[in-house]
Length: 240
Length: 124
Image (cartoon, rainbow over all chains, first blue to last red; front, side, top):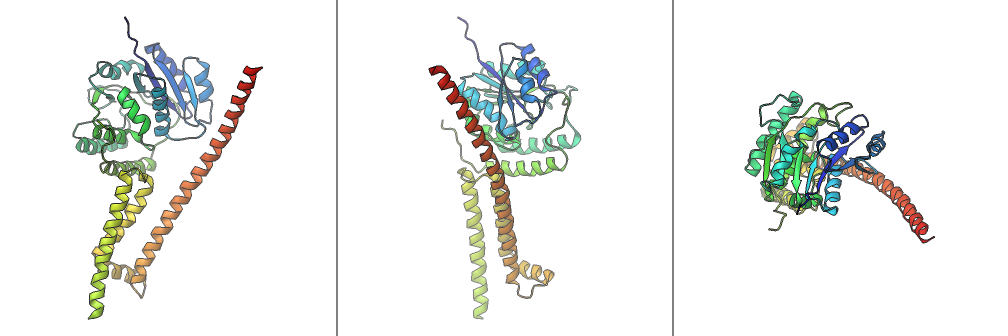
């Protein structure tokens, strides 16, 4: 008897009409059994049409922009309703590589971890590692988060992560809105989820602009650091 | 001499009040009654008031710098600036919410239309 594992790829996208077709095709190429959900975060360009045209994915067209946190959480809610076993995030801007998908899925499939983070900083590759200023910020998060949850996590801002059913159920309920990646690690760690990092490669985004850049990224960093500290005050939310 | 005692009591009241306020805000955040984005300004001004109440002379220094003759008026000035900042922040948040609610209403209206058309389509 073959037990099929239901896997969903959440592809958040905001105005990525140039990249989304390639992204969806690459996931399908890596494993045609993976269901794909593109979540267009209030895109004003042709992202939704392009995503639908391939026929390889389902597309949620959010009526207004919620930010990456809201868009990805939509995927978690969908996964919960659809009874998916494993979910992973694969960004619509082309930074994530389909060849690396199996690396983040494996520990979840084996049951060795509840959440797997694809880290750009824990192996020795020469993939794209983001700009210097971003790396500094990422280093700050590494120090803060590793201290707060007692586990070393090198890449706190990577969205390339896989989650099992427990994590999906939790995050469908509680997922931070702005710059969710570092905070999600904190609340997952504090609520007893098993986190694991694997080294992965990423590439620079294909076309278009990042939504976080320049002064904005400094402001976000302060906001996130404060949110992290405030997060520590919260009591455990998962009843065990 | 009576004046001296009153000043001391008010300082203790200010410190206790600031601490209680900060504790209240942190408690509300921990119970998810208050979102972090709205708590930041409250915490910021709560800490400022805690600082002012701990360091009594800071008020006199600020008043002297700004040219305010009656130094307690400086406290009120800071308080008012704090309240106005928080209110502006709320106005921005409410503006965003109003826009989103409008969009939701429009989308729901269209979804209801599609649902009704599907229903009547199936019946006939």
